[in-house]
Image (cartoon, rainbow, N blue to C red; front, top):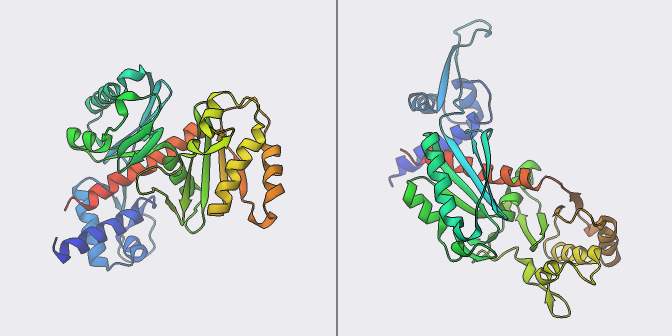
Length: 335
């Protein structure tokens, strides 16, 4: 790619970053905010208007004196993203606009043996309904590396499935397939503006524990997507954390169980915040877990413990962030 094309793509992305966080703007404001020259910013905005990425709103009526400037705003419906994730025997999915605002939300039940078929059926249905779908973001409760699914329980049709490449080639649309906890951690790092400090999210489902970490603002991927698979860790009597969860935590102190998970991650990553999504609502464990951590760790090393009931909401948020990022990356590469 010629240097001029690389510079153009970079400038497009800079302008996009500015306008998607600004309600109504002038070319002068975006040039100043982006630190690009006015002619460069003006030309890019004109191109975006022509491509219907930006809407022209006419002349700024409230400007004082001199020549009145033209005003613009992002066209939030220049493209939509399909957000989808699997949970037990349901596929949850929604359509969002270019700002990540939900347009429609759905839930469908399926048979575990036909999961892959159901994913294709849902995407086909949505693409027929909405011609503006420009990206697809999918969350998977298993080990994912570069969009390919490896270790996953209960979804036989998805094992060893290169889902990201399969879907992107089939539909000619950019697709992101992510591990569920990586998607959640990415979203929480954005919500909490965690750009320089570490953050850990822990999910304890009926099928066992999982986690993900954000280090210096970026979710940790690992070399083969195995990061966060803490269910494999041996715990009591040669049983793994996952085996204990599947047995209903028989003869195990629940607070100590989660406390050992927390201590392991705190000593390795020293996170500022640790967010828990625990489905076992009937158990009282928070105080016991914190006391267990205080027993072994210095007080200054303890993170902020956050107990969340918004697993699904945060999951959608993280996947939406990944999906809308694809939309804007596609614009920058379309020159």
